[in-house]
Amino acid sequence: MNRRFTFYCLLLVVVLLARCTKDQSGLLAEPDEERSGGETTVLATSATAFGFQAPNLSAADGLTFFTGNSLFNQNWVTAPASTTARDGLGPLFNARSCSGCHFRDGRGRPPNVTGETSHGLLLRLSQGNTLAGDIIPDVYYGSQLQDQSILGVPTEGSFSITYEAIVGAFTDGREYELLQPRYEISDLTQGPMSATHISPRVANHMVGMGLLEAIDEATLLSLADPDDRDHDGISGEVNYVYDVETGKYRAGRFGWKANQPSVRQQVASAFAGDLGITSELFPVQNCPPSIDCDDLPDGGRPEISRETLEKVVLYSSTLAVPGRRDWEEQPVLRGRDLFGELGCQTCHRSQLTTGAHPSIPELSGQTIRPYTDLLLHDMGDGLADGFSEFRADGREWRTPPLWGIGLFAIVNGHTRYLHDGRARDLSEAILWHGGEAEQSRAAFTALTETQRADLLAFLNSL
Ligand SMILES: [Ca+2]
Ligand SMILES: [Ca+2]
Ligand SMILES: [Ca+2]
Image (spheres, protein in one colour):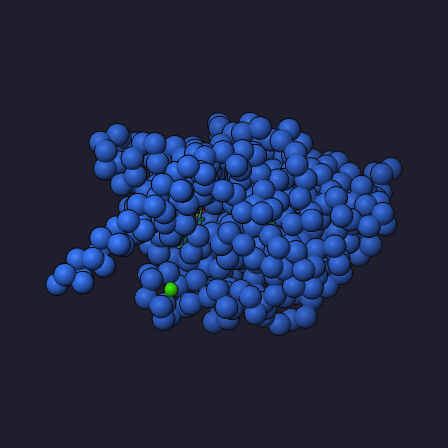
């Protein structure tokens, strides 16, 4: 009994001492904690913070990046045109340039009013899935609603969004209000829609894509725990998606459901689906059934050459990751520790190491802080879209990387988060978490106001 008492007394002294020293010196940042993209990091805080090339790029890759940048920003035009390098837009499209949605290489948002263009939200369509998980597209409208078209061709239709307010309260009594979006498609021009599932998605910010591509599949598998063997309530899973170049299924990394396997395929599918530009990877023109597209001039077959596509792929792969701001401030460091304590880090992984990038050695072997595991997680009913893609079911989403999310306000002039931009700030983004992240959400609502501010300060420093 006596020995036990002495033991607890000693323990108490040790704990108190530890606390004291901690309080005196304050919390410390880890070495290089601000360098989220390893050697590809830039310390930039302006409106162009997402637009820099990785500083460690070779001179040759730098030149390609420069051309890729203009192909990303410039408008594509209707064929035939004198600028044959940039013609072939449409007949159906959602925007005239990549940057029409990824404005300043940043995050899109839902339209503020019906019919607004260049916001960066699109609707994916399906009537279900094949046994292998591929989308079965709508008979007339394909797998995406294009709400713009070239002269003389009807658009497919348009859509509007209405929001229903949902109120809740933090444990300390402070109330909050979330907006649940509902989508309505109208003005359909090609007959009734057969798609039964709609998945709204906003354009992601573009930084660090090649680094995410360079993470070894073995690393992703080591993070995965599909059957939740360790019983922490979190069961991340790798998506396996169709690779149009090899005809095989491989690990998905890009898109809100990790539905694309590589930057190249993601970019080529954006050219085809979003701009109406065909490529070797997607050679078939997206054509409304009421039009004979063979009668329309095209921009070549394919409309973007392999060589030109590669430039946009390199550009999209090598945008520098912005370094962190205020990373040594005490509230930010307290927020960082809360991020770990609330279990956020179980999905939003703070540190990973890239393997060998197949074609861009500058991206290989980098210690990065992307705050993602690239895995699929069940996020509950609130975020569910009922839309499945390969192994991702209607409740599952890829953990999005959080690097750069504190800069949306400066770069894009808005603070909309989540796959459809429904969250109006970071706090709302967390409050929408459910499913595997329900414990984290609940723990967030139980924080004090100061703790919540610390956590948000940390997120804003990313
Ligand atoms: Ca075209
Ligand atoms: Ca379509
Ligand atoms: Ca688990």
